[in-house]
Length: 107
Image 1 (spheres, rainbow, N blue to C red):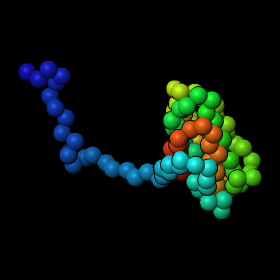
Image 2 (cartoon, rainbow, N blue to C red; image 1 turned 120 degrees about the horizontal axis):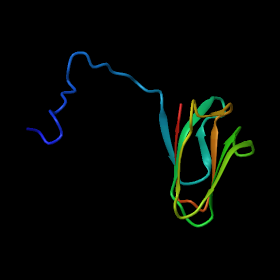
Image 3 (cartoon, one colour; image 1 turned 45 degrees about the horizontal axis):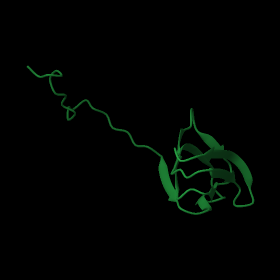
């Protein structure tokens, strides 16, 4: 008898497949992650923590509008955005302060 039940065979004929339109970008300095000519929806944000770290996500480039600002410490940052994510109408620019890097998932 198997301790956790019979093993599952995932190679059956009736299994469906799907594709995702998610993209992932990593930055270690301020910069444009999605061009200002494109719309994007941020679905998750992760950043390594250092005391008094900030991540600011902007739409419209470096001088654009701050859409989301996150302040965190040594615990780091791990945000899963609900629903369709956070809409950026003119690309996604990241402004980092006191964090070694940020990873952003977007559609």
